[in-house]
Length: 120
Image (tube, rainbow, N blue to C red; front, side, top):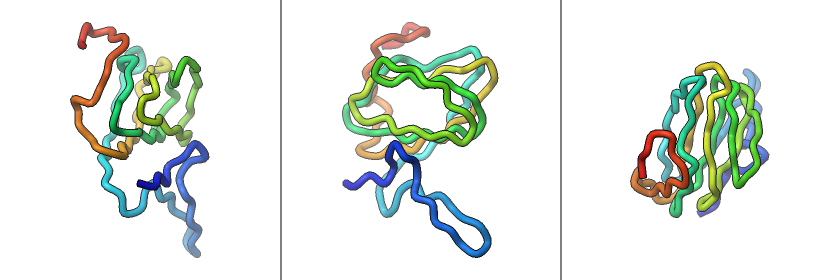
């Protein structure tokens, strides 16, 4: 499978009326909008069988990826490769993140390393 989502962001195609962003092309994907409360965070986790592309629709948010933490603003994107440890954290305001999962999607494909809510 070729991933069009990369660390540089989506493919941008210009048109006479403006432009559009293409995140994937003819690939099986699962698309979600994640609504994150400003003072909450997801588990520190990884997935064995899928990568995730995130675009901040409304932010900011903090993203922890393999030990590094970055602040992403509205419009910023990042790719979470399969097997990479990651966490999404609120940055004081409610946020919305577009999540596109690529690969074999299964909600049970989650290995939690640390979880504030005592889930395994």
